Image (cartoon, rainbow, N blue to C red):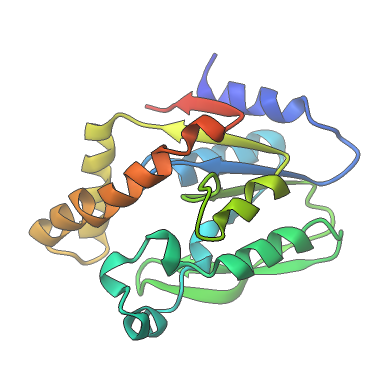
Amino acid sequence: MSALDAGAERIARLPGDRRILIGIAGAPGAGKSTFAAALAARVDGTVLPMDGFHLPQARLVELGRRDRMGAPDTFDVDAFVEVLGSLRTGEPVSAPAFDRTVEQPRPGAILIQPGDRIVLIEGNYLLHDADGWQRVAPLLDATIFVHLDHVIRHDRLIARHIAFGKTPDAAREWALGTDERNAALITAGSHRADLVLELD
């Protein structure tokens, strides 16, 4: 069974009479966004990326965390948890998106409508059990952790960083430094997922 089939099957086992929130977690470069988009197309769902909850660049600089962007404390976890709670109300919910070209969140760029029954929330720290993130998993109906071969993941990360403006050396340094430290923390929570899938 393919990873996509397995994810769709897991969702099909959940109640069909209310909104369903599915968490898709994984390390940087593991393919969360691509998988979430494909799964959303399969199950007629809507994707809500956690990346939109990055703290603005100016705030990261002010806090002295810019060189660790992507770490658990470089996101607005309180706002993220508030949005997840709001998704249970049945009312329209707006959320920020993340613009990689300027590495900044765009407030209100995503709108979840009352008719959006299945919402796929994808992000790094959905299964993290500290720093305020432990409040996230209990708000989700099911969680999926996606894993990708380390070499392929590193290559994709480096290519992504280069595509968005980093020099090859800077891209490699960030992917194997900051990204990899975050990846180790993220992967440590994979055992908490309801389903672990290997991507290729």
